[in-house]
Length: 67
Image (cartoon, rainbow, N blue to C red; front, side):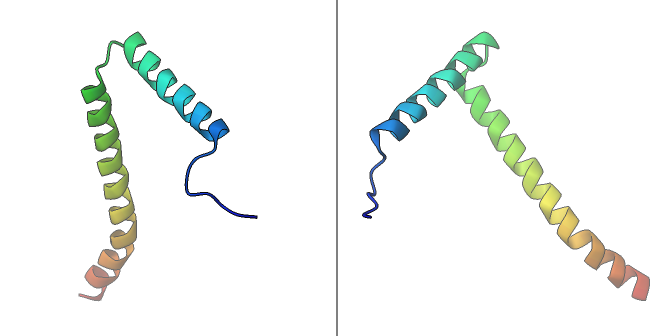
């Protein structure tokens, strides 16, 4: 079976539906696309911070307990 680098027509249709739903949700909540980008960026920063803290907190506690 050969895998094509291009999306299938079914996938393209699903992607267009998802984009339209996101735009409709933005219109319903009176958000502009820029505000959605800000919210998404904020969520990414928060999740990155959470992963960073959860990774380094145990290591920091080990260092401070040794002192």
